[in-house]
Image 1: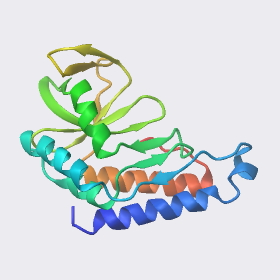
Image 2: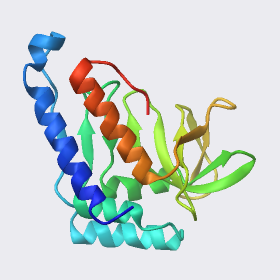
Image 3: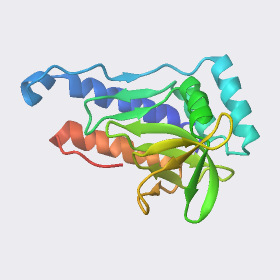
Image 4: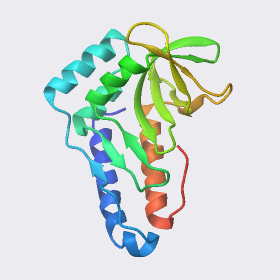
Length: 185
């Protein structure tokens, strides 16, 4: 992911969120919730996240993303789309640290979710693909970690990498703003 992509993406999402607010209640029959593209993450939050990512040997794409925005909340877009801020990403790492996927045990960093309980994670050490973790119980595995137990076969890649995931989210948001059609990530 090039350095400018996260900044362009955040500006695009902010513009789409502002466009969605215009006439929202007349179009959908209820008032809009707050749509938010947070300012860039604070240096101390970036440092904590960097420690986590470097400890897992994950590529720095997520860190670059948080240098452009500290998170995104789009509660009225589709089924809702959320990208957690770096503090929440680090906290979620304590809750959900490994998944059983495609016959492997993977360390993951959960960074996004939708309004239906699906979470999106980057596996270590590659950061690819972005994994879709369906709603499921979290069971203790080790101290400060857990295993995600979802329906067998319900896991899957959501995107080849973080840049593709963000592009898909932007496109799904644009489609919803234009047509009201919901697109799954």
